[in-house]
Image (cartoon, rainbow, N blue to C red; front, side, top):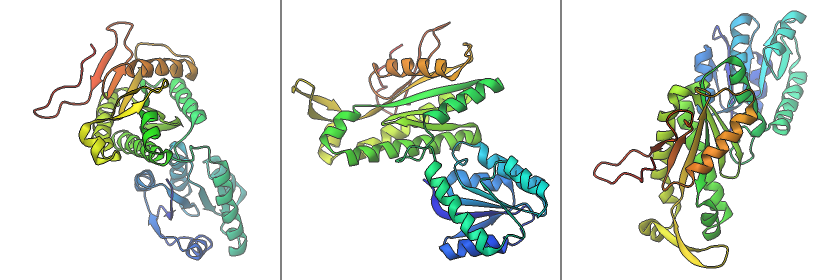
Length: 331
């Protein structure tokens, strides 16, 4: 989720333009000045700022390249980005071409700049196409990311994550507690995917407890194993002490019969284009849904790979704790 802070990007580390700094000060936001695109992306990926302000008056190429990187990433791309340029029309147009959400000329008056920046934030809040609770990209952005990777000829894995026994948890506790679990899973996915893959990773929220994350093929196993491990470590603490100690609670099924409900687990179905040829995102989504459904038939937290063209389904489980018993093997 975005925090109320501003990042100033200036390739030569000079002081931010007065028309920008005055507006930030008026809003009472903390700010910091960044001089390299790598630092800008690292900070924006860790804690999405409220706005990024780029000074392109003197080092236009470096400034606009940083703007392009910021807007190309699915997580940071929704951050409003304003660029200050020289007064000439060519520089003004180049900033918009680089992906800027707003462009101010160096000669823009503080009053006009403040009004346009206020409108920029309102427009950003209105147009942001992300899930309201997790602020992650939605279905449309998921399809766009898959399509972009297919068009670029990338080899990647699409991972469909879904919670098991989530409905029963909601019924026993509350939708508020359920939303908290959703946000926890979103944070786990984001932090692990971005921590391991950086800008090459994508995390999207379809809705409810359904998530998609997309990573380079060679990172799939590491990411999935860590997601499963961290989730299984954290989720017991979302239950009461009594339920946590027991490892289950009694809930009613659709016919009103009591039965044991285990603690929540996470199932991940994985599809890649390593051995399959996909022409559009819908094919990938359909197969990922199928693999997720298969994963949910297996006990515990698991990730399942679609490898049916050669070796069949390859099942991955949470690493076995020292001295413990492995989760059930479905090979």
